[in-house]
Amino acid sequence: MFVMKFLKKKFSLIILIFSFFLLIYVFYKSEIIHKGNRFNFYFIYYIFSSFLIFFSLITFFLNQKIKEYLIITVLTFIISIYAAELFLSLPKEPHKVKKFEKLTGKKWDKRSKLEIYNDLKIENNKITVTITPHFTRKKTQSSSSSPEIFPLGGVSNSETIYCNENGYYSIYQSDRHGFNNPDEEWDNEKIEYLLVGDSFAHGACVNRPNDIASVLRILSHKSVLNLGYSNNDPLIYYATLREYLNSNVDKVILFFYEGNDLSEQTMSYFKDNFINLYIKDLTFTQNLKTKQSEIDNYLKNEIDKEYRKKFKKKKDSKSLKFYQFIKLQKVRSIIYYYLPKRYRANYNRTFYQSRLKDFKEILILTKNLIEKNNSNLYIVYLPEYERYLFNYDNTIYNEISQLVNQLKIPFIDIHKEVFKKEQDPLKLFPFGSHGHYNIEGYKKVADVINKFTKK
Image (cartoon, rainbow, N blue to C red; front, side, top):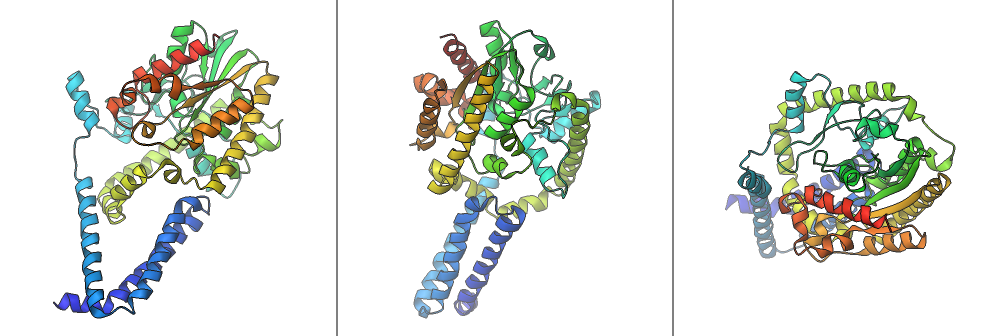
């Protein structure tokens, strides 16, 4: 009874203070931490906190009976949502883990990337992990001075730990420039296929010879050079071609992934003055081919610093988990996951059209570069997992296919040629769960590319 009396007296003030605190926190995250680059993401939180302020002001004028009902409703909602967060936070065996262990009789490797890196480093001091251009650029952006070098590949000639979606960590031997290739591919007199893209092109999370590039080598009996790397975006694809494209390349396969290739995070490279030099100055180059020793030293140092930081975070994991619980991280991620595609990716029309315009500019530059090299460009459209879960927004799919056709670039539609033909498209993902394609999925993609480019 005392609690209810107190709440009726202070409820409006508590809600008002909380609302202002939330608005200040959103502003801090959006404008100070992310420097306005993710305003589109935080926009909904601005709306929510502003609504709460308006709502709290109204409650000052409500009669006591209505306020009592309102307090009960709000408390019930808060308790329910935190109960849901608690349930989602309880340790449970994921569906794919159970399925893997039942099908293979093996145990899923449950080590974190940090743990497997530390374990394998005891036996092989030269082992390394993937470190994305996106990560290294984020580090240099936080520095006051401009970077002397911006790597587009990984550490060279090293066993490289990648990711685990299939019960084991994929590990590959990187080539002389830090990409996922047998090193001798660089010595071929003619390169039939050169691949650029993000993690799907990179080969996440399978071992050779099950990635797209390896399957393509087997099917075509020709040379394939893979310059894909995790978290890359269309501008980085273009920069990679500018740095590593040789005159002996016949076909350039550019992978477009509908899940995030036009997202705010990936397209943020267009706001980066250093990377934009590739657009503004068509003669600009970092001469990365000649700087691999410098690249290796830089990346090894960054990996060492990052994993020391992760080890410290592991010690503080209890406080981190509590912080995530308070922020309702699990509940928010589920809400985000099931929102329609355009809202999940923060595509309001103005921002989306801006990103599409940027992509068109890059695609034209890429096409001109490939034609000048006397090579042939193909765009491979990769569908995401969510497309096959619910009614999907085809805005990106339609506009990208129209744009590619308008520019007269051959368009390899993996949704149409592979997934749409499957009775159960989800079987081409790891144990039917969210992630990259599995071995069978990669093989079917490579098969379509091989047949299409023979026409």
